[in-house]
Image (cartoon, rainbow, N blue to C red; front, side):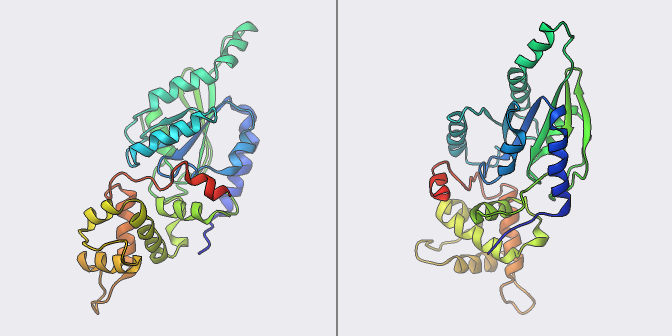
Length: 290
């Protein structure tokens, strides 16, 4: 399976970011706490260059809290402060704002040293589609300032938003990268909804997700779908069949409807109904980078 999704507007977004970076003081990069590495656009590092950066691990309420601590340590070892947030309810936003002050303090002091009244700090929010940028903006301004949705690509164009007197925000649409060479990352992006479902074979994505959960979170899978199968003794297709039968994901002929059962499992994962799950750990990076 080869997964890619790079519609024309993403190329324009990349150009938009590069063009406007000179106006920005700090970059806020939002990652999905369930897939911190897969949700990092590899182009961002070169695009952002030496700009101060704050990294957010969004949707931390959906991830495995034990693994989250490992990821925070992973980024800390690389001199990156990673802040867990929940963009929907605002958890972690105050800590983010505090960190923005820390990383832009030198700039503010330079303004004062030159006898200038410090202007508002200008930040840019970047991240992949459907990672929670618009929800974060809504939290920051306290109203529906940016369109939100559960489909990637809802935010169509750029916009400057005044957060408060000392902070302005430049919003950009979500951006992936032209070629996803790491297909493990491609699957993770598909599982979490960063790639438009309409471009995917949902039956295959559901099958791959079950395979992953059978190994990493078997108890979550068994508890949610009340299956008695021994995952060490069966294949993923057998697990799918049992879930489909238990949940009546059948067609008119009473045969397994793999599209329906795949959508069920994917939706349950995305909404957190399968429990707290993280699909990659720091130690996975060595094997994937080998």
